[in-house]
Length: 119
Image (cartoon, rainbow, N blue to C red; front, side):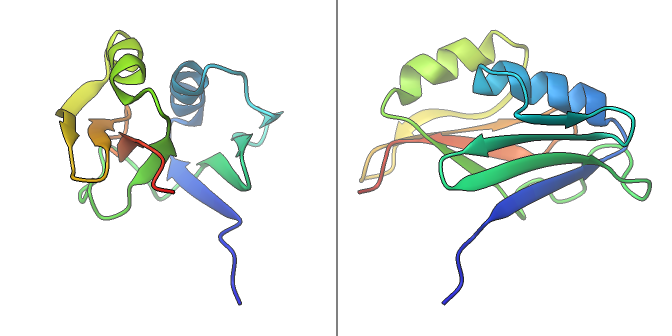
């Protein structure tokens, strides 16, 4: 049996993404190593990491290939809060039949979604 432990986002601008996700998540990184270009947050049972990666540059070429999903019962409210951070809105909140979902993009163009709990 496998459990998802973490997701790492490689970037050439780790400080920019770290500052962005601190605002989105509403808290500072749980781990930060600015010297080595690493920031991370424990989010429930999974860990989200931002890592300086020399081979990543510019906007992602396939932003929807891998998406982060942040679960919240307050999709509309969180969408409005996060939208004020100047993020790119991909899709406003809509009903997907099992709750609301909204899609946005981080400064590298990676998609992330806000969604109602599924369980």
